[in-house]
Image (cartoon, rainbow, N blue to C red; front, side, top):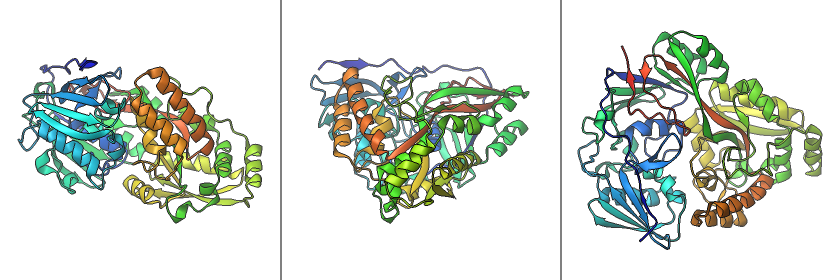
Length: 498
């Protein structure tokens, strides 16, 4: 074998002198199932970052580094990947992490009926346990994004002793913190796992995630000292935090986007002009003013988007810049499509103030072109479930972004993929994006992704509105926090001073 990737070790076990404590983080919504195979929410990934270690992780510079796997070797033909595992790791129930555990996890992700990880791991045909600390994946074809998938939920390791459809009721993983309790729509409580393999790097006794959908209330809780970190601070509150004493504003450019998903073929709700005619979707798109959305809702902090890759990505397609608003062209397309106006459409939206404001601005904009929008606000987990079963016409949702381009597009537009809620299907898209998974040459991958962009930009199964920036309000007592572009809050080296 060659192409051996020996990965540098994670931050070593380093003692920190600051005092331990319990970190309180205010989340903007309640995570869905605390099961990596079922999970779809961004906030769920934040909790998993403390609860469930992965085979690999990333650095702030987006380099892949070891976590539970310490080395990866790929065969000449790209069809075999062998992992060396970290020694001395246990799950929160005391059972050992080993090659058998990796096999059990990956096989569950591929076969569990409710798993949304299946399309991320389709290349893995069989798994060999070579020895206790060596596992081999036998692939159907070379899979360039696979190692990046293993640095995310597909690589999160759950205790085989706890694997069941009800895993999320009492999750057992191998991360720095273990599960204590969950109160729906209120809080998730974790405590330090004393036998964690890198326990000396964890300076907190525990972490509590408090669910506070209202951004104003989240900020008030930060100002009063009831929480230590506001996740996703409202852009309009950034200036207030900058000027306040005892708290600080921090931000970092993200990898993802927010957008609108159309129901094209997922049940009866797809049988609308919007779902059945790309011209109508294009008219809706042309009625939007993305720059104005960013300015009005986000004080100009978020960058308008037209594709899943930001302009800083090598996979960005310059042929598809953000769509410019053109109301007359939108009206003409509706007339060409034979649609009577006003055309009534329904948008489901997470029930947070910021997303409600976003969709209200959209509602006002598209009304000028002839769309009459009904806004349906839902708790986020409910929204995702309804999107999955087709109970929507338009769903306002987004994606926190991944380091490999495959993670930002394949799951959303290929036939039958886990996040393709609108059930868009285009054989050419499938062919291009599946081929891109097998290619390691970056230039060739760029070409394939740009060809795909030309197709889905015309079909418009979803619209991209803006690229994300992660905005935080942080109590000055919090020390040692490093921000990452993926928006995850990694707690190695973090402490809360008295």
